[in-house]
Length: 438
Ligand SMILES: Cc1cc2nc3c(=O)[nH]c(=O)nc-3n(C[C@H](O)[C@H](O)[C@H](O)COP(=O)(O)OP(=O)(O)OC[C@H]3O[C@@H](n4cnc5c(N)ncnc54)[C@H](O)[C@@H]3O)c2cc1C
Image (cartoon, rainbow, N blue to C red; front, side, top):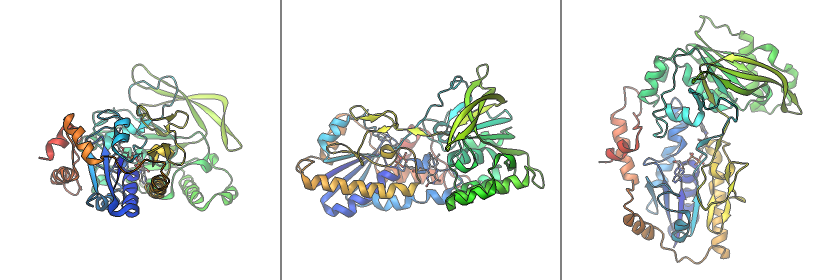
C-alpha cells in the first residue's frame, strides 16, 4: 500500500488525486489536505461568482472525494499545523498543490495607500474568502484603476459594473452585493503595459463587457494597430482583438447611453500612486514597444483614481523546508519533483497561468512521475504509516479536522441560507464554517 498526501484541494489537488486513483487503484490511500475547512481552492474563492457554470467542475472533484481510498482533511495548514518533514515521514509521496495565493507586488511608491488592493484580496472579498472578507473597499469614489490586461482584470471590471439584477443566479456574498449596490464608480480604467495585440483576455470574457446593462467598453481606434496586422495573431487572440475593434467602432457610445465607462488604456506603466492616506491619483509612464517588449518613453502623466486593483499575477506561499524559486515565485522543482518523495503540481509548480483544465494534464503527468519514483526505488519501500500515523499526530495536537461529510453539511447550510435565485450564501469566516458542520 502506498500513501499519498496532497496539500491543497483546488483543481490541481483533485486532478492529481483522480490520477492516483486511476494509476494505483486499491493500492493507494490519498489524503487531500486544505488549510480551509472547505474544499476546491479558487473554484470557490477565485472564479467569478457570476460564472456558475465554470464552478460546476467541482462536481467532478466530488466523485473523486467520495471514493473510499480518498479523503479530505480540511482545516489543517501544512507548514503550520504540521511540518513538511513530518508529512514526508508519514507519506510515501507529498504533493504540494497549494496554488499561488499571494498577490505579486506592484513595486511602486504609494502601493501601501488605502484603497489599493491586489486581486487576490479584492476577488477574495467579493467571493467571501475568510482572509479577505473584511476588506471593506471604499467604492464611494468615481474612478477605479485596474492594472493588468488579463481575465482577472476583466472579472474585476465586470463585477464593479454589474447591477444587482445582473447578479441574479450568482453566489456573490451578501456584503459585496450590498457594497456594490451603493457604489459610485462610473469610470473604470484597465491599464496595460503593452498594446492591443498583447492582451491576455479570452474572447468569451471580453465579449461579456459588451453585454453589461450599465457599462460600455471604450477603446480608442488610434490605440489599435493596423487591422492588417491581426492576420499574424493566433485565432483566439485575433478574436479578442476583433472584439476590441468592435468596441472602438462604437466610439464609447451606447444607445441608450450607459453610466459606466470601462476604458482600455494601452502602453502605460504604473510608476507611483499618490494620495493623503487614501489613493487619489496614479502616475503613469507611456511605453513604446521594442520587439514586443514595453520600454518606458520618459513621458509621464497622472490620472485621478479613487480605487486601485492590481491584477498582475500571484506568488506561491513559502513553506519551511521546501526549496523556493524566488524569481518565479513558486516552489523550485524539475517537472514537479522537488526532493525525493516531495512534489509540486498546478500553480504551485508552474506559476499562475492557464485555465482550470490545464491542471488536469499537470496532475496526471505528476502521478506518472510518482509511479516511476516508486518503481525505481527513488522513494523508499512502502512502509510509511500514512493516514493512521497522521490521525495519531492530529489527535496528539488536538487538530480540529473537517471531513468531506462535514463539508457537505456546511454546504447544506450555505444552500439553505441562499437568497432567492442564488445557489448559496457562503460562510465568510472559519468559525462559522466549523460551527455549521454541526
Ligand atoms: C480571480 C481568478 C479567476 C479565475 N477564473 C477562472 C475561470 O473563470 N476559468 C478557468 O478555467 N480558470 C480560472 N482561474 C484559474 C484557476 O482558478 C486556476 O487554474 C486553478 O485554481 C489553480 O489550481 P491550483 O489547485 O493549483 O490552486 P488553487 O485553486 O489556488 O488551490 C490551492 C489550495 O491549496 C490550499 N492551501 C494553500 N496553502 C496551504 C497549506 N499550507 N496547507 C494546506 N492547504 C493549503 C488553498 O486553501 C487552496 O484550497 C481563475 C483564477 C483566478 C485567480
